[in-house]
Image (cartoon, rainbow, N blue to C red):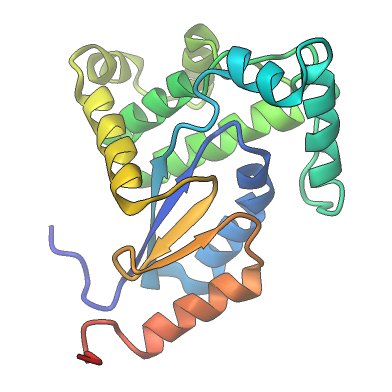
Length: 222
């Protein structure tokens, strides 16, 4: 299906276990409310927390790395009253990887569409950060899929036949080719504009407004 010529496509690269992507969740929702059908946000994934059992002790300390990281996550979220952090997040609940979640998210998009994928991504972040649920475990992930009334046999087919893995591989390869190094990263204007990290809503909105008012394909400086 051909995309509308005036639709602004935003490739949103994130890791589901990244607290800054959880903090950015209200901004995603506000963009949808403000711009509606004028924008399309494509959820894509990067490997930041693919191996947490090595990453967190190495970066935050062998003996108390998880408690130190929990404190960092709580401090990062504290200024943002829209998001909350469960006491078990990274203390007792320690997902070993984000890649299982990313794989299920790509399967969800393939079998149920973009809206279902976005709802699943929101739910997974909420379940981990606010509810303290282990979203690194595939069994737990499938339980969440059932709670959302997704078609489990179709999801299992996308997982088993390799199509979800292929879609995730495409995300990882594209992120590498574009030089995307962190989560979240907003890629606009076919990757010409990259907004990385804790980007305020006004900045996001201003960039989208500029593309709406001055489409990138209407003129060239060269």
